[in-house]
Image 1 (cartoon, rainbow, N blue to C red):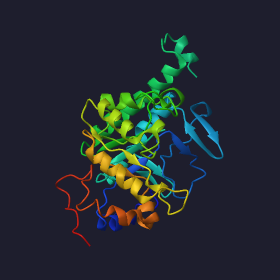
Image 2 (cartoon, rainbow, N blue to C red; image 1 turned 30 degrees about the vertical axis):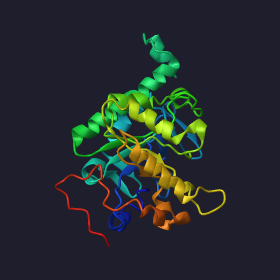
Image 3 (cartoon, helix red, strand yellow; image 1 turned 180 degrees about the horizontal axis):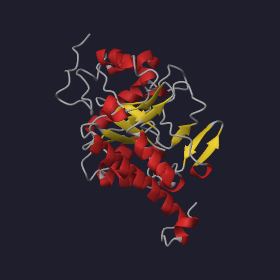
Image 4 (cartoon, helix red, strand yellow; image 1 turned 45 degrees about the vertical axis):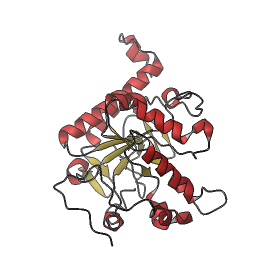
Amino acid sequence: MGLATAATAPLALAKQRIGLSTSFKPVRMVRSDRPVANATTVIPPRPKARASTAANGGGHARPNHRAIQCTYRGSFLHYQHPASPNHDIINRKSSSPLSVTYFGAAPYQKGGGKLDRNDWRRDAVNRFVERMYREVKKAKPKVKVGISPIGIWRPGNPPGITGLDSYAELYADSRLWLKEGWCDYFAPQLYWPIKQQKQSFPRLLQWWTEQNVKGRMLCPGLFTSRVTGTDKGWPADEIIEQIKLTRQQAGAGGHIHFSMHTLMENSGGVAESLKTLYSGAAKGQGTPAAEPKTPGKP
C-alpha cells in the first residue's frame, strides 16, 4: 500500500478485518528534488553517482556502496518523504509490521578481498538484510520485519522448477535470509497458478517450508491481482484453491494478497468468494496484545 493513502485506509480496512503491514523496496529510490506522487519507497539523500544507477529521474541504489549501506541503515529509523521530512518509521508506525520487498568489486579485491564480483555483490545485499533486521529489532523489538522475495530462489530448486535465477541475476540469496532468521515472517511471491508445473505453486511452497529451519512465519504471497473478471485473468477459484493448499501445507502459517486494491474493488468477485474462507479476524504480525482488540464484524 502506498504511504500517501495509508493515512485514511487503515480504519476502513480494519472494519474488513484485514491485517496490515508497511512495505518498502529498500534499494529503489527517486530523487528528492523530483518527488513522485504516492511514492512507496525510501527516499535517501541524493547519493554520489557511483553509489547509484539512474534512469528517468529515479533508479536503484548500489547496496555494496558504503554510503548506501549507511544511508539505508538510517532510513528505516528516519524515513524521508516529500510530505513529511524525517518521518520516524519505527517510532510512529510501531503498530505495523515492516515488509521488505526485494529486489564495482575492483577496489575490494585490490584491498585483499577474496570474493569474486558476484559473491561480493551478494555479500553486500546479505549484510544489508542482516543489519536492517537487527537494527530494527534493536530500535523497537515489537515491530515485526518481513521479507517478500521472488518465489524462485534458483532454477532447479526444487527439481523441475524454471524461471528467473534471482540468486545469480539479482544477487538475492533469499534462502540464506530465511535460514539465518533475518526476518520475523517470510513471504515468497508465488505468483503462478497451481497447474503451471514449471513454476509449481504447491511444490515451491513445500520447498520454502523445508528451508525454514529457524521456524519463522512463512506466508506465501498470492497474485490476487490476476483475478480481473476478464478472459485473460484468473478465476477467483484459483486464489481460493491456493489458500486451501497453503492451509494444508505443514509449516505454512498464512498468506498475503497482492494487492489490496483488488480486494477493495472485488475484481472478478474475488472478495466475495473469500468470504467462504475467512470467518475470523486476521492475526496481525505486528499487533501486540496490549493494543486495542480487533473491531467486531460490521
